[in-house]
Length: 417
Image (cartoon, rainbow, N blue to C red):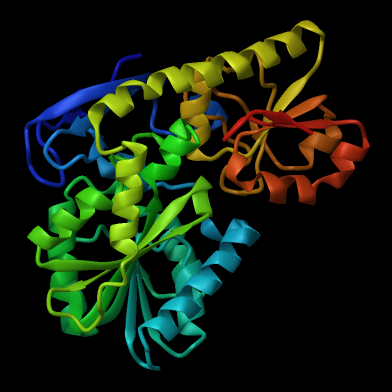
């Protein structure tokens, strides 16, 4: 099914530098929105699909989607919850400690998290007696966070909300955004609002999937409609500079298969450049991800992965083996559509997130069950679609392996336990 025009538009300029010098470098199979799970009574309704075409800006080297789905459609009824992953809880605990110590935050300082989800990160700041506020348009998750004591406004981050925050709570010493910085179509507007909301010595910290890791590991399944921007450091330095901010430090982190944590302040802020930003720029030039020709060849790497995995799964099915999936992250939608892996291959998907259990996967309509299903139904093989959590998933389910089951990890490289 083709897309729904009222929910989708195609932009013609780079969202970082506004250039029209954009080159399409590769395209993935069109999919529905990657988190558009459906209930049983919606199975008869075919879901619209939208293009997943990647464009490279020849002026600033930013890689991006130009096809944009209405964010209300993507985020108002969200099913991803940070707090279901023990590794992410640990990650956010360390993250909060690093910010409190590194930026010398004090009790009473205001910390705002844009795209705060269930408040997992903010809870660690609150525990240290900082004031916290979450901003998240997913009404169901925002309500749950507020009920747990993390004040969360169920709204999109915009000028009206910034003015309300300044009037009722004052400026923020720290603003965080985790993966949200890949979600926003109007990044210039987001940064303008952040500038208005920060104290003079405040810091904006963002975490986002790192384009260098996407290239190195062929992590193409991190490409889906929620992620309209695929960030590397080089274009962001110029972008922040042109919008009154200084990108003063960056570090690589392991989350989502490879991300970066960027630290940004208002121009003239107290933090000095650490050299980490330039080091990553040098690294990006070495990889060649600042060149469009590099990304034109990326499709060949994806196709090689597809052939390897599909050949394996086809052989297993021909041998009469049963196959299930584990984890129903957004990236699974991209992987299954582009590799042509549907219900004829995967019987069901287990997932630990209660919000997804009992639903069906976007477009392909594979049932999502609890993790108990791999013991009850005893599939011969389980492909870990949430491959970035593969070590944790396998460690949590030794009984499945002991019973003779096998896990398949599709990325960054194919392996079988």
